[in-house]
Length: 167
Figure 1: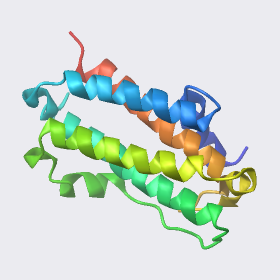
Figure 2: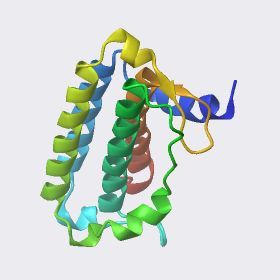
Figure 3: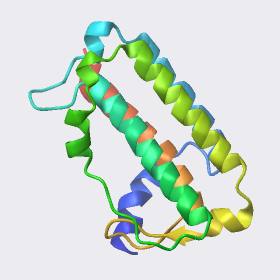
């Protein structure tokens, strides 16, 4: 199995369903449930010095979903250009998360997720099976990207539960 398949398998396996629409719906409900329960103070909390705040973590989820959906769009349209990766550790400090309200982050997550739904629900089977590559990873299918988007949310919600909302 290629390095990219091993890396992304962790996210794919965490998707709640093999049906992308179901996985997107379930993970949206999960994420909004967690985000809606946070106080404004909790949004700015990090579990340790140098770690992301919850606002930064959720903005990372949003950034990643946008980028992965863009990749899915390009690959679904047959674009075979090798796409660059992105460094989340460079993006997060520039997100201005400290000035954002929890409500604004929830609204942005919902808007991005609606766009992701619209993209994937209008792809046919042929488009879903098209592949492309980004960064140094081997080719991955549009279908797999949909599951990665959902599994990435589950992964980070696990981090929130294990490291931020303990006690």
